[in-house]
Image (cartoon, one colour):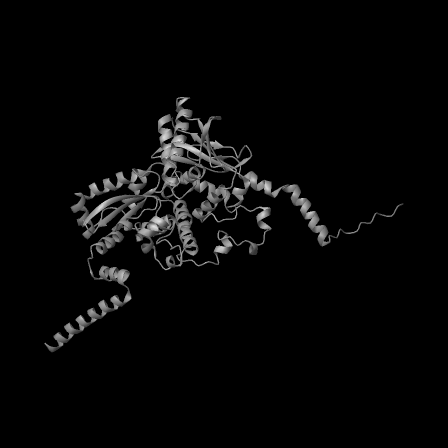
Length: 496
């Protein structure tokens, strides 16, 4: 009888264990990078339900979004470009949307081709479609002749099939040579010279025509971990856009906390919307301002937000700094215009009297605020402001990051009409969002304080105004004068 077979216990050395683990993980996930790429598969525009393939002639899909005109969902746009462009923002934080998109726009300048697909969701005539795209491209270039060529190409291409009906695909290939090649449903129509960068900016710059598209690009392309990014040592990354590098740079402004919990404005504004609005969009503006100040001239670094907003030279020569600084101020002001407890209804006191004087009644004022808000094209802010020269309240609509302070009008109240402020909760029902703001959220106590300050009513508003404009020495003089007055009165009473 053969002796029993003796087996030695299996002992793994460190190299053997590492090799075995590698085999096991390879079997479970053969290609980690491929898994990341698979996650970026075909995207669907949530607004129109139009889908885009993840690959177009070897180009990768970056993001998709809806182009709206008021309540109308005109088309969905998807952007495709090369792997190098996508890699340029893969390590950047999603919280700094403007910085990431600025980096991407610079990277696209060296891409051989960047393609925008516009898939129609609403029927638009050839002339209207050509005019709309030309109007978007025109402010972004000085070459009016090239814009007219592109406009004619679009007009001719769409006219051949009658109109840009749902299902029609307009393709714009932005080439490294500067040309924009235009096709309709796969049929090439022709090319317009020198418009490559301007056309990319229509969708990617700070005033891009589809905020949802910009958000999608950042969401799908930023903070992507791959083998190439994880193995590169942090010390070798010296770019100013590297988030680890930014941590060592000066933060001139910080994101202020909200004056209430994230769920305090429900059901008018959901916790999900408020968190994204504050922690993503508001934070993005703060990060961008800090980055621009760090990279800019030394004399800019000591300015506060109001000084930046009111500086005409900055508005003209550094529009990115102006817009983002204004957005920081606008958001800080907007948060205070709402309250989760005791909000809504009608104002009282000086503000109520001034509204009746300048608008006839509170209902007239509210109707004007509502109608102005729903007229906002794309993105903007609706303001109640006080014009000190006219001594009158006015309803004002500013586009993008505009602010009444730049026109020497004092803000009293505002409603944020950017899509990210309401779209998750209301989609295109903007009037419902504005009604909810007035019915349940508006903070009339804060607006009343702003009205008193604007008209210089009361001792405290006067101190606030003087300190903000002339500094602490004058504050000391005012307090000292007030103390002397009370002492004199006290002595008179003692003598009597």
